[in-house]
Structure formats: structure tokens, C-alpha cells
Amino acid sequence: MKLQKDFYNRPDVVQVAQDLLGKYLYTNHNGMLTGGIIVETEAYSGTNDKACHAHLNRRTQRTEIMYHEGGVAYVYLVYGMYNLFNIITNVEGRADAVLVRAIEPTEGIEEMLLRRNMAAPKPNLTAGPGVMSIALGIDRRHYGEDLTGNTIWVEDQGMEVSAEGIAIGPRIGIDYAGDDALLPWRFWLKGNKWVSRKK
Image (cartoon, rainbow, N blue to C red):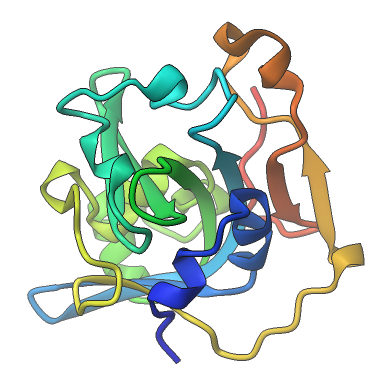
């Protein structure tokens, strides 16, 4: 079942980030379906989170989509080469987001291998937000994409994820955020080989 606005519009972005674990993320580009199980996420709050792009109510051309109603895509470029896929949550004006860091590929694996120029599926195929976006064909053209549509969406297929099955730790690559870099807002499925590795 495709997730609808009521899932994304909830006020607790940390809870949404955990609830996305075990859901299925899909993309459909020109009839080519690719996707897999979300196994790693990070939460970012527009309120009192120095790691969030919208901290201190920052509104720029890049962050404007963060202030929209939840259920749209926020895609931005890092290191001049990687597009990172985020899901906007909460109600209009709140600027919360969940970064999807990794999936366990289940659909369209051959196409993902082609996009990543890889011969065989290894964990680094989709383990990490930059390479995951390449595998799924997500780039800045999808900034603002409606996640209840037919290009990028998330499904609940009934996979049960217990609280005991979720690992929790600080987010990655946000040392600039000071004390907020230590917030335990990264979540991943314990023991899943497709989770990204901290360098």
C-alpha cells in the first residue's frame, strides 16, 4: 500500500524516520521500476537542529521545498557529484525532513547495476545516500516530486520492524552542527548488510 500524506504529515520527524525502516522505496523512470527496503534513515528538524538546512528559519531557493506540506522530495547536491534524497515531513511551514541513507535492493537490480556501472550486487550498490540515488535514478530533477505519485513513492508491504530491531546512533557527516551532531537521530536495521558504513 502506497504511503499517503497522513503518514508524512505527522509532527515527530524522529518517529517518522524510524517508521520508514522496513518500508519499500520505489522509482519508476520510463517504465523501469527499481527499489528496495529502506534500511537506514536520518531525521532533521527545522526547529532547533543546527544540522538542518532550514535551521534558524533559513529560506533559500534550495530549502524552500522544506517548508511545504510533508510527502514531497527534497533532493540536493553534495561534493558536486551526489544527489541526496530526503522526504519532507510535518505540516506546511515546519521544514522537517528524513534523509534516506540506504535500501536493500529488491526490484530492478540489473538496472541499478547498470546505473552504478557494477557487475554484481554488493552492499555498496545502495548503501549510502549518494550511491543509492544513482542506483534509483534520483537527481535534482526530482526536487519537489510528489511522493504519492507514480515516479517516486514509498509502500508499506506489512514488514514488521520491532523496536529491538532498530539500531540508533548519531548522524553522519554533520560535525559542523556542534552538539546537535551528537543527537541520536540515525536509525538502521540491526545486522542488515546494506546499511552504510561510517568512514
